Image (cartoon, rainbow over all chains, first blue to last red; front, side, top):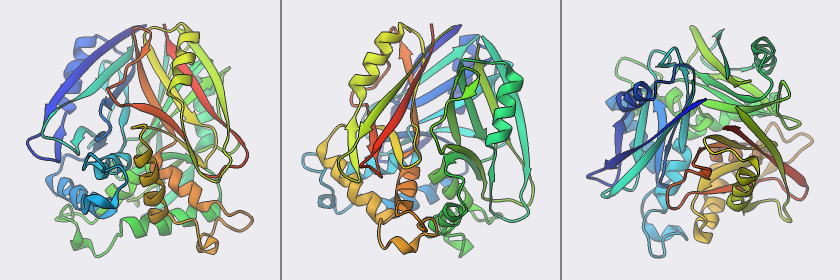
Amino acid sequence: MKSYRKELWFEAKSRRQIFNITHEIETCLHESGIREGLCLVNAMHITASVYINDAEPGLYSDYERWLERLAPEKPYDQYAHNGYEDNADAHLKRTIMGREVVVAVTDGKLDFGPWEQIHYYELDGKRKKRALVKIIGE
Amino acid sequence: MKSYRKELWFEAKSRRQIFNITHEIETCLHESGIREGLCLVNAMHITASVYINDAEPGLYSDYERWLERLAPEKPYDQYAHNGYEDNADAHLKRTIMGREVVVAVTDGKLDFGPWEQIHYYELDGKRKKRALVKIIGE
Amino acid sequence: MKSYRKELWFEAKSRRQIFNITHEIETCLHESGIREGLCLVNAMHITASVYINDAEPGLYSDYERWLERLAPEKPYDQYAHNGYEDNADAHLKRTIMGREVVVAVTDGKLDFGPWEQIHYYELDGKRKKRALVKIIGE
């Protein structure tokens, strides 16, 4: 069994930002030399998400509005977590979006349907944060 | 390390439909010959979900009503994604339900608790769509 | 390829309770002897969750209030699932929180960012229930 590990770094200019990281993950897979296996991609921070969906700007803005409705950022004092911090909403929004994805690796490629794209969703940005790529197989 | 791959096809008659696919996944596992490992099952489309929960008709209808409350289908023009399409709600509903499940394989069986059942949840149906089964182990 | 399996048992005193199980999972990983691979931790019951987020009491209480807003426990008769049971809300809350986590194993350790902690979230307690730990790798 082979294994491969890489950290991907992000620095969002704003509090929230969506990055399409599909191409970076394909590069990782190529570097790994793994042909059959599983590829895990997860946020290493608890106020960010890695998720799979369409790379479509309309959907990105729908996510923004929808998450704000389900877990509003403000008022900050509605959350017990916001004693020293103001990011409780980011913990909840990331819970909806999910921490990680697991993707099949087949014949040296990400085994995807037609519109699947991997995204890193920063929910509490303006600082350097990471996602982890771990691939196992052979 | 062995690996196994199979696509499962679905064609829902209505916009939304839940399929219990536990038996199909058990058949895949048997075909794979894998005794110890991990089994990934994921929707290959971004408006469908693979999830694990009870195979109970009351719960199925609760999911329908609950998802409609959290991410309503209509009015279609509430979503930026709905320029040429009308399925933005399906992207959001699938985000709640999740894209994939990873199940332990132990002694040649899906290593499940008493009520765990794998479902494919079609959220934008009336056409042919797929789920992917990938099993690795030995 | 090596594989390791263990069940972790819980008995929550109340209907809902959050357990930080990070240390137990680290112990499992040590017992497994696996240095590189993937670690799956999942609830074996469909009214409980295994999730990763901050081990912070304020956030725990935010989760409680937030999940109750998204999927209220009462009135019980709002859910079709609640014929003989009263736990439909637990099925829905667990859907938000997720069934499972997959964690990278690198150099014999859980490959975590600075604040990642694994939790078992009991959503329909007062009885004995289980989570499953499955580690594969070498």
